[in-house]
Image (cartoon, rainbow, N blue to C red; front, side, top):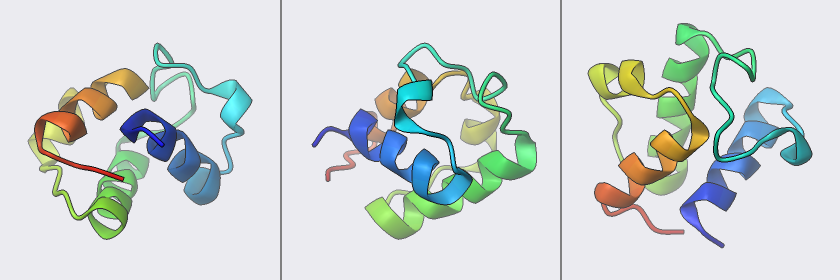
Length: 78
């Protein structure tokens, strides 16, 4: 499993977004996630992967791939 796959799994589990609705280029806006949802996503990442995403970093995330790249850069592993 890759970081991207884990993110897709988390979006399904936490937000009810089916995996087949998500691509690397999907924006969080297209997935109907607002800033509060991104905070919740950040907390889920910390719980599931042990990696903290700051509020500033979360605000910069536009796509699912952005999130995957950030987590990989922070050393997250699944």
